[in-house]
Length: 290
Image: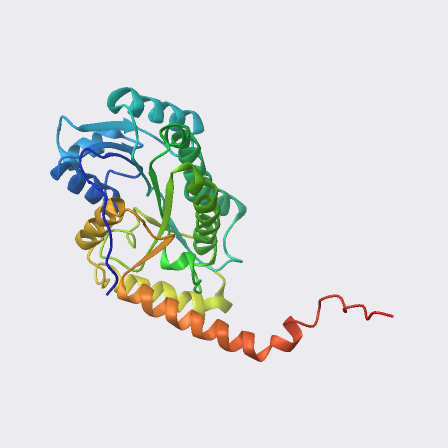
């Protein structure tokens, strides 16, 4: 078994988006319990206090991640209160279920505004302080859907594919500056993600998709609050990740994510082997010496 080296967890300062419920609230709670400081953000900061209670090391801030000015202000307030930000957890986001064709431009735009552009707003707001300190860890919450897409989840998965690409680039850009980046790929965890509060449905439904998208809608309704993942254990895994001296670029969480990843790797390798001659046939011919 590979030994995971850990750094000191003492006095970390966390900046967590979407901290009023779900993963964000659990991570904030566990960080506070072990003595860390937490900047917990939500559209309504009172919902954070309702979840976590009053705490001397908690700063609850108003932040709609789609508002770049609010992100900048929140990062400034965090630095003013605690002097630094050690761990950024980009957790805010929501889901959209429906066929790609069913999703309206407005529904797609709103989803990207939160899941992608919101993450970018917050990351750009926090990175100057991390770069100046030559330390820090950006943890972007993606999904198993950021690695492998599904029927009915195409638009949502595309936002998480974007998060994966951004995170991978950030990993390479920030490594020489002492800032770490990890993208986390949770599977299905027993949170309220499949409730109406976190999962929206396209306004349009096309009958021809009943066997694919319709079946997925029914499957998700039946799976709600029966998901295999334990969110309490995910929170502990995130704390362990933050304490690791050499964190991974990607961290899969949940046996379902691991199984899906392995299945996709097998599929891609088999398909590549089948089409390898075509794949490699498009390079320029090597000029023969006269």
